[in-house]
Structure formats: structure tokens, C-alpha cells
Length: 332
Image (tube, rainbow, N blue to C red; front, side, top):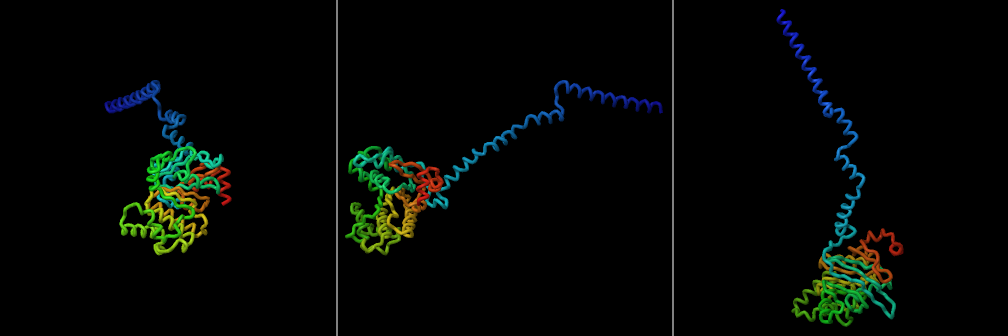
């Protein structure tokens, strides 16, 4: 019994010694600056983790994400409901006007025109009557000689270009005049055959092209009619068909809805969009018709006092704070 009691006493003494050693070890750790869990929690409260700090920065500056989102939305705008046209190639410029000026008897109609058009794009030039919109596109093709400035079409500067070379460039550009400019003494068929006279095509090839473009504008059944038998809208369509028969890379539309009733005007605008999709042509559309601009434009510029001022999509210009642009939209 004495031996058993001694053993128990020894075990108890060992246990107390172990506990004492543990307390000493903890004190040593504290002296060396080792942090206990409670202390660590206090430090963390004063110094939030880095990840939380970054999260706070994102919340304080949401515009970075927003800008990226807007850029993505802008690239999709060409295929949206408001812009049902095909997207243009925004890396290739097919028309570029720089500091273009034109005066008549000392009065400047075009003071300083700067404009560029991308491949496959419908560019609308919007402005009031008498602002020089038609003068601008005539100067582009040197139907009028500009006073100064540069005009680069499909990579070539047409200013000071010799007549032979200029005519080659003109063949790559179609021009739809306000009046359609049909020959009254010729049938529709003959009007469309006329631009093909120097292309050395067989009659069978000519017939095929004539029928194809007439079908594109929905007037195949008018092939033997005279211009006097056509309505204003039909004349515009035939004029566009004659432009398309040479498969131009660029089309210039001069007031395409002028003199037309609203229903026919809308049909012409929708036809312009169809032509853009089918023929992949770039276009400059001169108009003061806001509905025409809304239907046709990928991008727009406003012509005021001989200069191109505001630029953007129809929706962007509609929300513009510029007083002239606001007045123009509100008036129409």
C-alpha cells in the first residue's frame, strides 16, 4: 500500500511540473513577440485584408467597368434595331475630305469641310437647305472645282488629277441625282444600258445586268416604259438601278427623298439600306429629312455655316445639347 501511494504521489508531482513548464513556455513566447489569437484579431481589425481594400476601390470607381460595357454596346449598335444596316469596316477609310473650301463670287459656301467615311458605311450629311450639302458632293467628284483642300477617294487624291484618271475613279462611284436624271427619249431599258456602252459586253450579258438591277429595285415590269410614264418614286428607283448597274464601291445620294410622299420616301430609304447590305457599298446620303437619316444612317454629321460640326449616330445627335442640333431635331 505504501508503494502504491508513493507512485501516485510521483505521478501527481510530474503532472504539476509539466503544467508549470507549459506556463513558462507561454510567457517566453509572449516575451519574444509571438501573437496570440486574440491579439491577432485586434490587429486585423485595424488593418483590413488587401483583397477587401481592392473590392472597396472597385465599388468607389464603377466607371471603368461601365466604359468597357459602353464600348461593347457601341460595337453592337450597327446590328441593333435602331441601326439594322450591316456593320461597316471601321479600319478602312474610303472617302476623306480635308479642309475643303468652295466659294461663289467671294461668298464661302464651304468654309472648312473635314469628313471621312468608312468602308461599308452609310454616312448621312444632315443640314438645312442652302447649307452647301450638294455643293460638297459635287466638289468631291470635281463636278465643281473646289477652291482648296484635299479629296481622297478609294486611296487616291482626286484634286489636280488629270481627266482620264479622274474618269476611272468616277466609274467606281455612283451618283443618284435629286431628279434621277433619266433620258426622257429613252425607255427604262435603254437608260440602264447606256452606262454599259463602253464595257464590251455581249447583249446577253447586258440584258442580264439590266434585269438584275431592275429586280433589285422592284421594277422589273417597268423595263419597256418611258420616263414620262413613271411616278416620282419610280423614277428614283430607276435612277438608283442605273447607278447600281456599274456595281460602284461608293454611292452618293443627293436628297433621295426630295419631292416624295412619306410612304414612297420610306420605301426609298429602306431600299438604300437593302442596297448597302446586298452590294456592300459605302454611301454618303445628303438630306434634311430626319426620317431618312434615322432609317439609313450608321453615322451622321451636321453641316452648319460651311463646316461639319456634330458627329455621331442618330440617337446620339438626338440627345445632343448643342442648341443648333436640338433646334433642328425639334423643328422637324
